[in-house]
Length: 232
Image (tube, rainbow, N blue to C red; front, top):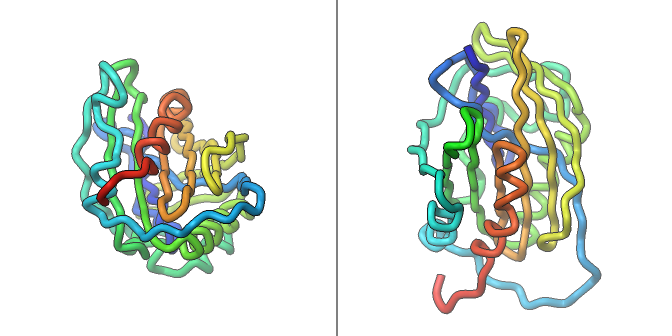
């Protein structure tokens, strides 16, 4: 059986929504540690946050990704009894985070895809929008917690998963960017997920999944999510 680990990047806290062994379900994207790069002190006009409807129009779709990609339905959130071991910083984010509490930002959109190139070829994109300082502060808080815990365990029911994190370089794609490889290990098996997050103005783009697919599509995701439109 393959390891199924569901972890959600909450922009107010780290939401670990459970893990189990399930041969039918793939590995979902996970939260990441930051490698933050800021541009020089340039003065740019602040823009208003986008609505969820506007964000949904800026998600990648099959035509953007190319042949072989299929959009997958969103799974309902799970609220298993989750415990984080070995990472006090994550525990301090609050119990709501540990059980998959709702996101702090009301403006959001998400899409997930599978790729015919392999059984573990998956890609997910999440978009969030709010005031620039709030996005930066809240995202930074989570990433700081993750940075302090390169290895920890997640217990959900009777399942135990060891999570190992490793920061990786990410090119400057926006005002701030973060990227990490996460390895999930349980039952003698392991899986690797890459996640890259980019903040440009009032929008945060999070692309997660198979490392090769994330690298191939993150620039396109950022470009589509932050393009200047006449309405939105």
